[in-house]
Amino acid sequence: MSEGGDEMNSSALAHRASAAAADRRWPQPLIEGFLRFRDNHFPSDDIEYLRLFSEGQKPKFLIVGCCDSRVDPALIFNCAPGELFVVRNVANIVPPNEARIGHHGTTAAIEYGVCNLGVEHIVVLGHEHCGGIQNLLKTRGAGNPDSFIDDWMRLVESARVSVERDYVHATEEVRGRACEQRAILVSLKNLLTFPWIAQRVAERALRIHGWYFDIKQGQLLGYNDATGEFEPL
Ligand SMILES: [Zn+2]
Image 1 (cartoon, rainbow, N blue to C red):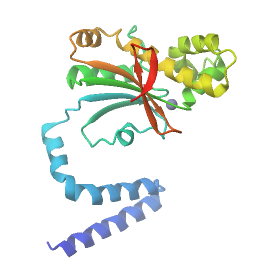
Image 2 (cartoon, protein in one colour):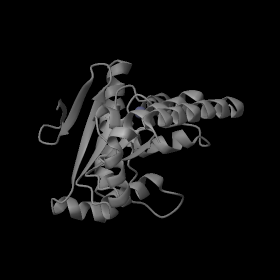
Image 3 (cartoon, protein in one colour):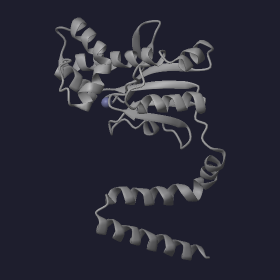
Image 4 (tube, helix red, strand yellow):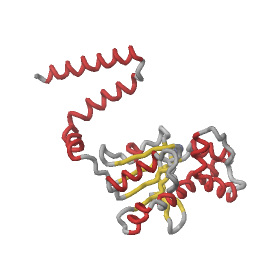
């Protein structure tokens, strides 16, 4: 088939998808975005996608990020498909190794990344103005027992308590930033409660990092355990 024919097919397909979306009230911007993605990437990157499809994924980096729509790890780190294994949840929290009650989506993803994919680095990526952390500071450990968010945020309650203690006279902004960063440290500690992580870290087959994305400044900070500070990378 000629290139012109392909273009016509693509256009007809786009039109059909557009009509179907309007009919079913699908979110049209997402469908249009997918069509742009397919048109822009598949003709040039199809070899890469074919390789990823046939060889499978071998990402070296596991990112634990926040659900926040402003902090997409693939965008922030300018990574291509296949480079990042990402798990996102409210406030980028890693729960501790605990009894097998409930469902552990974040832990399952981390186990898969470490034990099955063999990632070499885990980055817990926190960020400025995190809604989950703001909620934690607002409820002061006395959230609604029926709220999944309040219950989830109790995982980093120790960060809140230490910030309330150490930043008595600080502004809300400063306390929020401190709590966002201390919550990352809670997650770093929790990562080491899993024996399959602790062992790999001890063998230097795996490294774990606490990073913080400053949205306003467009700056990336990393936790330096020698200084105990988050420093520009
Ligand atoms: Zn967040």
